[in-house]
Structures are given as structure tokens and as C-alpha cells.
Image (cartoon, rainbow, N blue to C red; front, side, top):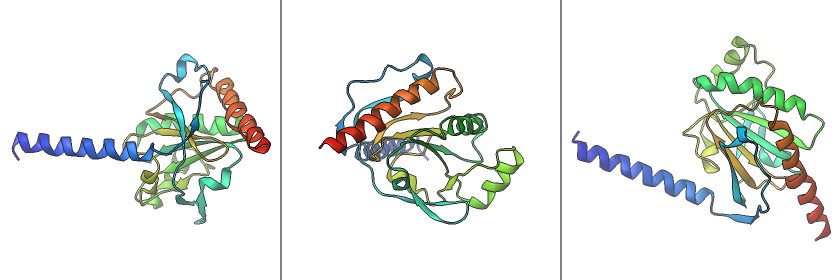
Length: 202
């Protein structure tokens, strides 16, 4: 294949990806100002200027039940995309487990979603590396792409108590840093407590 044709194909793919991302982030719900000051460790996290409404997408849990983000409205929702073939995910999964445990009594939910096409590999992988139990959801048909591009993982997406997307991180972050939990608690205050109080007063 000629280099010029390769370049054209790469450019077309890039434009399609950019258009898809722009479309996914186009539904403005409300301005997120004023911003919560991010700790240095969270520089890889994008705190969106506008909360965005997202499509209602259905996934499957390990028991075969149909599940969706709507099941966790009223909480700060942290969605972590991972796969069995993703080596950085081996580092991030234990951090996700600790975050979920630390916030089990808070208005917070952490949902891992495996983007593996072959979902039969997921549970053996979790057992092999000592991650079980890990209540991951499955997405063999890449339905998450209706909400967020999954071409880079691990990736983490944050949603407010109403189910609007408020931020994301693409790539590995050190979620175990001591400054992460206080930041999450500030997010819960802003995007759960204050948001729901505002909703009740309307």
C-alpha cells in the first residue's frame, strides 16, 4: 500500500474518532464551575467544564443480569474500563478495589467494565491474579463506545448523581495516592450532596 494512501486512511480514522468523541460530549447538562482544586497526582484527570448527559446503555454482570449506570443514580459513579490483555490494568485493579472498599458507606459506586470480546476469559483472569471477588460488568459488544471511546485503557469515567458525565482519565493513574480520597470526597459533596439538594429545592 502506498504511503500516501496509508496517510489518508490514518487521517480519515483520526477524523472519525474526533467526530465521535465530539458527538459523545455534545449534550451539555450544566456548567461544572466552580472547579474543585485537583491534587497534583490527578493531573491526568480531565474535569469537564460542562457535565454531559449520556445515552442509556445496558451491560451484563458476571451472573448474566442486565445492568446499567441508571442503577447507581444518586451516587458519584466511577466507571473503570479494563481488559484481560491490558498490562497497566493489573496495577489499577487493586487500586479500584481499595477505592470501592474505602467508600462503601459513602454515596459512591465504583463499577469496573471489562471490554474483552471473549467474556469467558474474565473470571479465570481475575482468579489467576487474586482479584476475585471483583464485581465487574461485561461489554463484549463494545456498547461503552456509545458513551466514551475505549481505544485507550485503562480509562476511568466519572458521573454525577443524575448520571451526567463530569470527567475522565485515559491511561494509568496512581489512584492509591493519599490525595485521591479527599478529592473524591469533595466530588461527592459537589456532585451528589449539593446537586441533589439543588434538585430538591427546584
